[in-house]
Image (cartoon, rainbow, N blue to C red; front, side, top):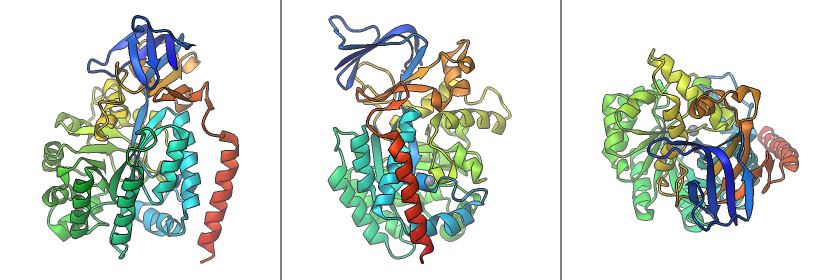
Length: 433
Ligand SMILES: [Zn+2]
């Protein structure tokens, strides 16, 4: 289908952060073929009215545990370690594939409604998640969670490699697969070496939690004599693309290693604040040349998958952290949520900006609302004023997944009942033991 979005404000996030007023966006099949004006001879099958609409590239959520939506508001107002070890892990021990499937579907519905078109997941039973991604129409990089602290390392790695064989590049290329070593504190150095050698063989990247708490860094120094980032570097992990989730406690030497290793840091301000873990030095990471993207983390620690909220928090936190209102301007935050996310996943040639030849992963914000008027600066509007609920329409690879706030590939109403019932079943299983 040839689609023309006519007369919209186009926030391109190209190399010049160009904004085009009253521009047309032309889409042929899965691809963007015109930005600003349609190419000569373009005949649209359908025209969308772009008046009072802001069109931007789909948001890329680079750190999630999608199926944790079933644990939303299950364990709150707790410190990180009791939250993880006494509440979340015991419930996760009872997860069955159907829990993961329904949790993923709920998360996908939430993400699409909030303008997220691509996500980077770390979890278990990811065949179910891959299937949901294929059916719902968005993009996902799925990484099997790996740890060997209680003897299950080989089984998890086998499952994660199997997932790569079954799903990498499937669903028109929308599903890709990486490996998800949970963290240097739940993976032994020997196990990390094994994971790395599989990643090199499969030519895929690593998705790993790094330097999320002060205690993690202190224990790494005690146990290994180095920081978590230095440990990953010493093991050779940066020979493959690495997305380091959090990166809160990274010193200048760590930041240099991340840059030299071509690693990305996925910043999760909502989760980091809620668990009182800290504020990542985002401006310093960016100034040091590290690619920094944005993520929500799981819904058990956020408690939503709302990238507009993360953009807002990211900007505000850096200003206070640096005692500098000029830190992390809206323009840079929007790049973190789009093109930097694409870079983190090695997808910057395909998604992350509105440019001719890229995939038509596009979101349309309804700007005809009191809290979005007047429109002095569309970039500031998106970061400081817009809400996830302002997203009207979402396309991935040219296919409409949300139209005027209605999901087209998922049944949003029955999903809520289904998710409630599945959560009840999970809690019943957990309390039976
Ligand atoms: Zn996480």
